[in-house]
Image (cartoon, rainbow, N blue to C red):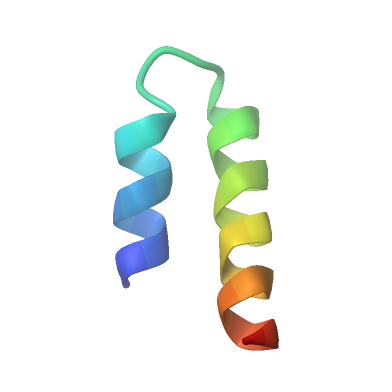
Length: 33
């Protein structure tokens, strides 16, 4: 689960909602590719 680790790594200073949103967008981008 690279997307979850990436979201947790990038969302350390922001709210958990932002990290969750980023994780969702990252997963959709990976799935679309």
